[in-house]
Image (tube, rainbow, N blue to C red; front, side):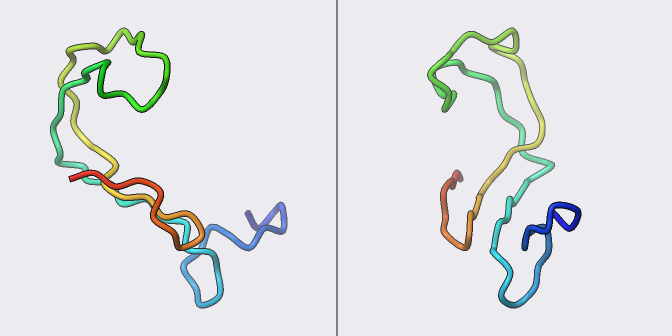
Length: 67
């Protein structure tokens, strides 16, 4: 962001609140029907995974949330 002159990539007063809260301990199974993408084809279908995005803010506004 600094190289491009974009006011992003930092936590500071006045900076855009672009955050992703990640839970590295969350375990989940890849289920194609639950994918957010329109394309449901994945070689990982049925695979057990660890780590999951729990919450995302863009410019201070919630855009994604999961339990």
